[in-house]
Length: 361
Length: 274
Image (tube, rainbow over all chains, first blue to last red; front, side, top):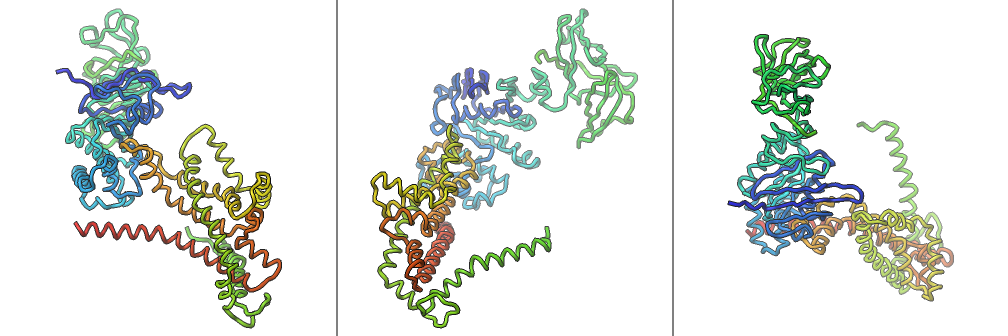
């Protein structure tokens, strides 16, 4: 069956005077998916979501909601709704009145409004007596749920989120991330979420779109972003990573330009197809790098000195200095920790299967 | 942090000075108003409340109160409306000449009132308007509405613009947003602005002196009587005027609480009736 996207962006450009905030964004958002747009501050994600919600108009390009072009339709005439970063709960109204607000605007009767508000309180797992509570009597997590309930009361085609968890402490954020994912499954609505935290995106989303300086750098699932980034930017954005500049050799293998990497197994037969002299970036995540015993070898091997060991909770992180002075990061589960001492001469190795080549910058 | 000895001494000194210079003079006016004698002398030998009786009977006093109340009342209402929209322009919306507007609107507050009064009087003459209590309203507004704007603007600065955006996002029209979100949120500011406006207009002397023409407000009359023809009616009216201010102040402080309390009671009732 031909799945039509619920929201389609065609070459969206946004300029503020001389400054170009968005350079032609193309994106299809599928019905019922949880899409997260991730980017550092200043990457244009807030600008983009404001266009999607209708609080601003694009300079160029088209936004289609199913079969309707909506890029110049104002926010109050769009069937979409956003949960704001500040949550934007009305402080002069009770929890119930906040949730009922979109229904009141639509002229729904008082009894029906209340009935719906109570249903939503239950859906969000808030006790019924919260209906008459004041907003300032609610905790951070409860406010979050009230804001969600209010957005759901609107019954939007798409629910947008502008970093609503960023003001909360770590533990509460982790809990709410999972709740949000669960809520997405239970409601079946399309969620579009923006955040600067890729970790947050990983936990919740079906797909992740990485933004960089007003462009979409990569749009794929969490696995793809983590294991097969298209650029060094994406690779580095998602936590610790080891990157080496490499170039193809005449023998169909690769050679490192900086660090002394001993290449054993990489050639055209197992997916390394750099032309002689062609450059790329080799990427390996720290958890796939192993400390080799003297009898072992691997597809890629680097020698170095163990400089530091850090405890990261369930994992241990090691800093290894290669011969040319550059640093590699290795992560091991506690049970697999390295048994030697700081200052040891170590040999690191990893499989070709856990190696990824980045051809962009 | 514990208050240091020096800080405490300074605070006590401050309190004592405030009482000496602010409140004791008021008390002395109070004493003067209950004196039986025709002239201001201390210590007072005979006490009497007959001047209060006279004040309440006097038609002059009635006229003065009506004039002062009318001016203050109208100035209050207009200042609240002008101040509300002025504050939105001042604090909420970003527009091209905003910083110029912010400076211009505050200027009249810093102008010496006597100069402002004189300038307005000359302006009224030039326009051929005969000064009366109506021109005094205009004069008061020139000085008071910027203050009202500033008071409401402080409130407007403190509220999250996302609240209005959220309301719009949920389908509210501009009118609904104003009615359901902006106005209720700025209400405390609007009420204090109204309070300021009333008290500043009620007690204003320099602007009234220049612009009321043949009409007279309470402060003007008090001054005129003080200069020529003193009677204990002067302190009596002074005290009455202060009492009126205090009543207005208390009303403004208590009414919002009363409204909240009544709403609370109503909510409780609704919950029980279900």
